[in-house]
Length: 152
Length: 152
Length: 84
Length: 84
Image 1 (cartoon, rainbow over the protein chains, first blue to last red):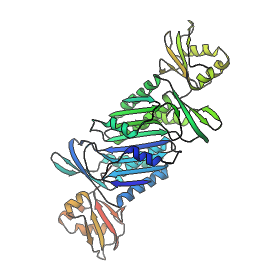
Image 2: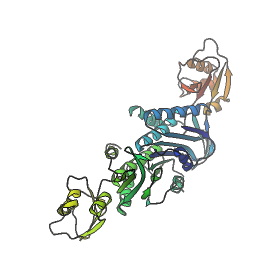
Image 3: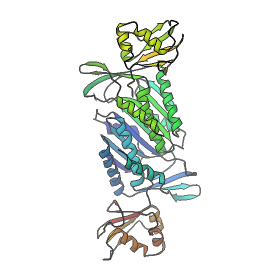
């Protein structure tokens, strides 16, 4: 498993190629890219800054991936999360999961994203027209993470 | 929506960039790549040939994407499916879905793959050690497609 | 005349990918056409028998037995799909 | 002494990202530390009040109120996370 917290951008093709390398048993690659939108809750967003808790963030994501590996049959999993200043259309987060069959890859990829949204210590501050404000946690993210308790 | 049936390989970064271009409202990009495995049902696979029904295949995939658009809030959807001779570790299929929020993107991407596996006219012939054989449809694929009837 | 297409295993076993078939007045739907082809015997009888998991399309849309067919239609028979 | 870290809005409002805090013998768990900080009044009282949705970690693992803490530990307080 690979976890990286970085200010640099990433390229999904490059990351998938590295994750697949040397494993001809992989049949499925599910991936997710989170992107900065130019609006959030109705406000135009000009820029955002992502803060994290160095050390704990990486551990929390490794723990999330570990849980996914315990639930589904996976080969590899990768999470890259950017920090620092980001603008609309910038990539924020990449999750890639490889497995033999697609069901495992899809489920694990979505599980990792849902848990990352509620468990990994990152915080967003948005600068919109009127000023800067810390983004409030969304109840829908808690619900998204919670539903995995009822499943498989 | 974009549907391509082609013998050429594809690059996921290039395809995602084209799909995202000019839409700063996209917050989520879910994608799936299907890959030729070197084993299938216990047999070593040396090569496979993918046949399709020109015309109907494209229509069937467009119909599947249309159904996904009716169920979830999506911006764009792309399906590329290769035909002709493929070898282990070759990419077979790419599905990319963009949306404002990740739940829609994940669900639609998996739905499109599940329906494509049971509704789009493609057939695989595998050449293994002993000779060539047509791959039999898997009951698990029917089950995967069927479960969407109960949802959403 | 209807154009009849065969794909994958069916194409190989029946030895052709397409043919033109004249429809007798008694054949008005997909099931009728299938029965007419089965009546040829041999590989046709074996491969298109009602017990076999053959799928069909009429004018490039998946179709079941009672879908009407008429001159000019494109009808296809093929095994369950295995793409993706 | 424990190291106490603050992140995001808490870091800004409390005006610091980290501090060293001497633990009196009466403070043995996370809840005790939080109450001790609330007793400073002002922004501390307001931001760390039990009614506020503050999250905490002890030695970089998410922690609830009765988790014991002792000298040398790293304790962090922060708002609900909003990454991804």
